[in-house]
Image (cartoon, rainbow, N blue to C red; front, side, top):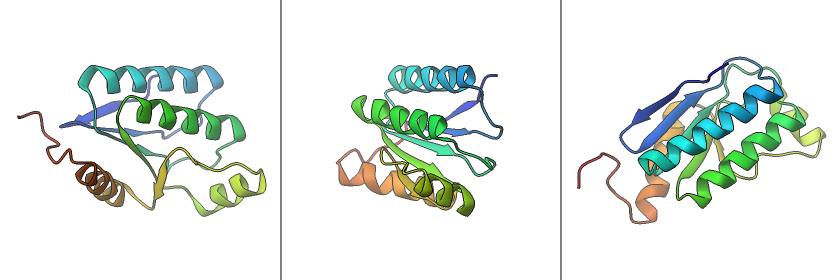
Length: 128
């Protein structure tokens, strides 16, 4: 299964709307990291609002993906963690330490814009 990755200037938006198999999760990770590199993305928003379950493996994939994105120079936010997902992650001793977490995509884009602005990369579009 291929997870769509949308481009908004130099920000990438992706929404995981179904539970992923391990292979799908790795495919998503590879696709996203490749796209970050291709467009020299400054930010990535990963929306997981539709996910009812985030197991330890998926939490690790998101953390690792966020770390890879930051190594490539992109800021990362995870949008829409459901309350029971947050409780489960904490109970398992897992968190999403590689990314900021926000309630929704609107807040995610605002957080990305602020973090990008603070690091001095004010232009999010393709122009110079």
